[in-house]
Every structure is written in structure tokens, then in C-alpha cells.
Length: 293
Image 1 (cartoon, rainbow, N blue to C red):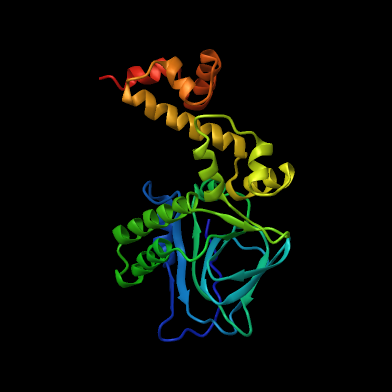
Image 2: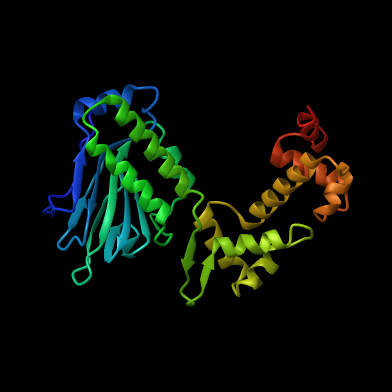
């Protein structure tokens, strides 16, 4: 299947960049075992993109846009979203959208069109949100700059396979970047801050009401916002952090399984073992045995 890549005809300045993977190489990348899962179709960098505007009624590729500075907007089935510096847009194939630069403070953005058999799996890692407010991340800027270096390498397949892996690493790194949401109340829910509270309570209990109260939110709005940012329920993440700490204690080898459970606030060793097995996939004693060789 031939993918039609539709990029804008925005006039490119001397310090801008727009690069399209040639169709011959696209076909090879789509079939190659090392790149077929996810590979770049087109990529670019638009500085202060005054007048930049694009409408894609039925896109047949995925698109990632990272706004480094300035402002822009996105129109989709969810309505209009304002985009600013440090915002990330994830636009899946098949979903109509339009976007453009703000007239007074036009955005500076990196972008990459991509496709492949594993793209939906990568996007699923990032959750359903089209707009993620992650802030200006120096590491992410460096990753985009490294990916854009493809245009200097000539049309050699190994360079494009390497670029496919750079893109895959970039996408998977987005799943572990700290996320935050600006709420209508004026408050901000920061996932890093929530998980810091969780880590401070690894040795005792913490329920959803107590977590929500820490951030002055209702139980419902806290849980809904946290799940939207991470794709997980907050208490499940708390349990996962506890079990990760249990693994570290078991690796150290100095505590009995019962004592490890007590260290994490579980007085019932059988309950702790059942929970550990559910999260880790094996009993605590079996996990410890794996690490005694």
C-alpha cells in the first residue's frame, strides 16, 4: 500500500528544513524486519512559521508535532485546542484535523510523519490525548535534531533504518516523560508530584481519597485526570511502585518474604504474596530464587 504524505507548502526559510523519504526507500522500510514497525515518511523544522496552516481531512499517516516556542492551534473532533511552547501534538492516521500558527506569535515546531505496523502500539503507550503539555525538554529537542540529521546522510538504507530506530526511541521516550495538566480550577496536576507522594508512602497505605486531598481535587476529577495523563489508574501505579520496591528488597536478600511485605505496609503475608504474583507474574520466593545464582 502506498502512503500519500501530505506536508504543507509553507515557504521554507534558510534555517528551516523539510525532508521527505523517497517512495522507493519507503517501500523498502515498510518491508524490512528492522524498520517495518515504525519509520519516518517526512520530517522537518519550521522556525517562527508565520502563515503556516494545514488541513488534513483524511490523513493516511501518523503525525507528531512538537512546539518549541510561540503559539498555534489544533482543530479536531474535540474542538479547538490552543498550542504553546512545550506542547506535543499526536495526530493518528484516519482522524481529520487542521492546525496552524498563531497570527501574532507564530509557533516554532518540529514535525515528523510516520507509518508502520507497530505505530498504533507506540501511540497506545502514549494514551488517547492528542495534546500533551510536557514543557520544553532539552533531551527531546536533541532527539529531534538527531533525527533531522537524516537529511545529510544521503539515500542509503542503513541510515534510514537507523532513523527508524531513532524515531521509535523518541516515541517510547515520550511515554516516560513527566506529564501535567492545567485544570479549569486553575490548579495543576503534575504526575511527577503525585508519584513523589506515592514514593513517600511506600511503607504504609494510601487510598484514592487521601491522594486526591493532597492535590485539593475531588476523588473523581483526580482519578480521571491522572488516568488521562498516564493511561493508568493512580492506585494501580501506587501498587506498581510498591512491588518495584519489593523486588529491590528481595534482590538484596537480607529480609524474609514476610518482612518485605511488612516493610511495604502489608501485615498479611499471604495478601502481599498474592498482590506480588499479580503484578510481577510469580511468587516472591520464586522471584528471589531467580537472583540467587
